[in-house]
Length: 302
Image 1 (cartoon, one colour):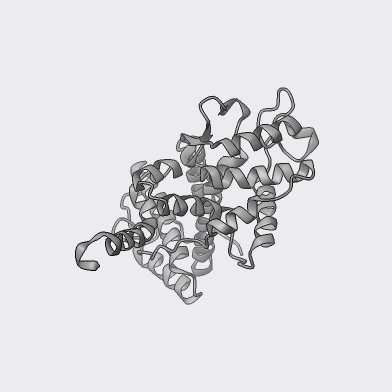
Image 2: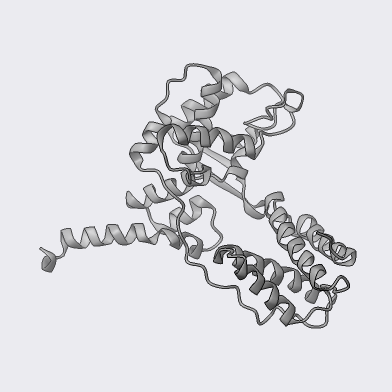
């Protein structure tokens, strides 16, 4: 479907700002691009001459109604509202528009659902594989790092060898918004990592997990898609749950920490969340533990 070229130019200026100034990740920018181009295609369908700079609030509301009509999830619609608010905030602050029509439109609340998780027994089964060849060593190393550190797939793909500190048992990773953070290694992970590096890491290689394309090995990292496919293959080996993803290992990491008594603030830091609200989706775990402790310890519950 077509869209107005002036609208395309305005969107591309905004996306360039997110990349060059805000330093958003490619993944985040791609999501913004998808949402914004969907919006200007909708505007073109309504009126080919309709400009994003000149629309009124009713145009935005009608767009949102059309999304509801298509049975999009509340989460998807909330993301699209957030995207539109971002570009209108940008245009308002840079005096591209006189009035921010999105200012009074609120992002709809979405009930937070944790992704499907692995039990501790399933994690043990996932990682307890005979390291029979080099390929298996690489794949299990990826799975181990996911679960041992709570790392995101984008962070794992971009681990630089120079940022691994075996003495301190840490790895410096580049998180959301290009913010550096530290993740912690355990002894098991260090042993496996050293075994992997002895096989796969060449001198002058930049990234821990190098590109699977040989000519790019020294300078480029493995793709997120390759990591996703490796992880999905092994998750299918131990579970019939098709909804398990690499992100499920990150959430399993957080959930198992809390089940073992870890503090919510510590888990927040380990996950690299900017605010506690992002981590509070896990409070159901603490609530279960609190109820169990109460039943076990309070005099009136005996």
